Length: 217
Ligand code: MD6
Ligand code: FE
Image 1: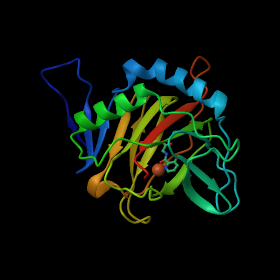
Image 2: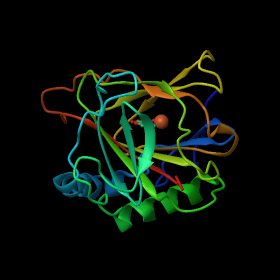
Image 3: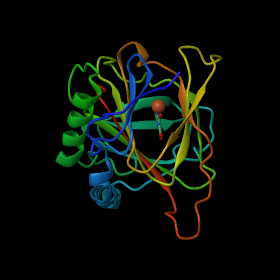
């Protein structure tokens, strides 16, 4: 059950919704930074372009992916892992912008979740209409003590929030431009995914972007 915890006496504060005991959705929390975040993505992807990684099963992901930070998440025929270099260029990933680390710190503080430290890895996803992410757990990190911090930008999406087992019931959570979702602690290994992103209206943005910061090492 999702419970709304509105800051009733301060209408300037966005809503905070608790999905589970240690999973929190901060509606619109990144809105003031959204244009700057999209500009940062444009800069990062000049050096580390979006690409459709191949899963260990041999299929190209529908989501286009890149990374920034000390470690980047990569997938190929050998599996999923973190790498300090971009396998496409053999160069280090672009640095995580200070603005992103600041936003992560503020989101963790506002959410009240505990954290073993600042993120050192950041995955950037680009969803064209139709792109999706099947149910999975984030378990390639060495440290599960820090929450996953997920920022949604652009086209809206439906996030699937499952349990500790793949077969557990999933809730559907609408994610809009500027929303920040965090999950840690006892909820750190929850199954989650993204439904196929719907086509936007003609005037709307072309893509959904997702920035996911983690502490991987
Ligand atoms: C999202 N991405 O794009 C959420 N997790 O909204 C993920 O959950 C994710 O894209 C692990 C590895 C790659 C991912
Ligand atoms: Fe994930």
